[in-house]
Length: 179
Image 1 (cartoon, rainbow, N blue to C red):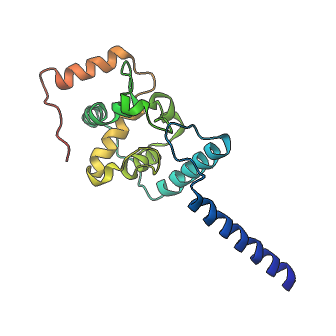
Image 2 (cartoon, rainbow, N blue to C red; image 1 turned 45 degrees about the horizontal axis):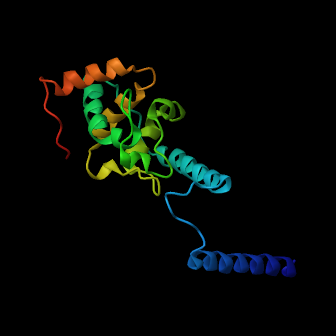
């Protein structure tokens, strides 16, 4: 039994040394212009998904989403999120197109996350993806407003998005200033 434990410890030490050597060697290509291989993609996606699920456990239930929250969330989304995620009738910017991994099209991605998980992602961001933490610049009410809007993206038409933009910025409301 002692030999077995010594063997396991020895193997872990060798793996640790190999891992440190790999990191310091520069062999891992961090270039955003290179796509991740399937193992890297699996490891990063699985780690991110499990982390979000675990982190979102501490998020309380969402408030009832009101029309005002939806409109406020739209303004935040239109000004901050379309750069990377695009939107109905809105192409990603050059910045968004250069991200690796690509920011998801939220019309599709939102279906995979609960409102609490979306809140956690928006508030805390996701390392090494380009998704910033908006918790430093937005209070929880603002983050919930963004969630309220993002929840409605699936099924939103280009015309509906344009109408929201016209209503928000076309005369009755001023573009938002960020906190």
